[in-house]
Image (cartoon, rainbow, N blue to C red; front, side, top):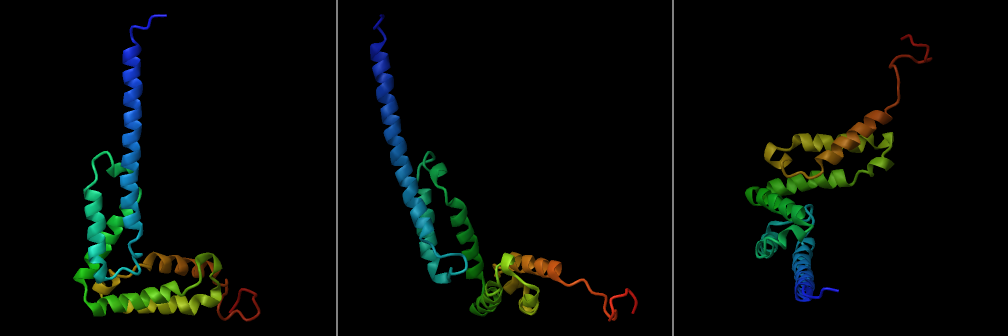
Length: 172
């Protein structure tokens, strides 16, 4: 057996061990940033007072190395919180309150898979409240997609009736 390359082999093994240790340190650093991001309030509960928490999470992310940053799994959550905060800071408290009232109406609707045609009045009320908002207020509503899905589900659940056809013979 030729053992002239044993030193190279030992050096390679040592280098692999060093790289594995560095990867663990990188994962730990990224995990700390993920924890900071996960500790942020949900978009729904985010308030202007949370601006410093978002900045701290962004600063923690920015302090990571280029090797560590891709290991952060919650960057999209941070970016969404930053975008929401930008909207909140630009909005008046009145606009935020009006949008929250509509979001609360939407949140009170049953889940899409539990929605029944009897919920139509609540869905319509949420839509009417949304439609009364100003454009600035509409931009703060988080539940618009949920409302649209509820409206589609209600439309699918609508009974198939021909109005005026009292005996269901197809004639009015």
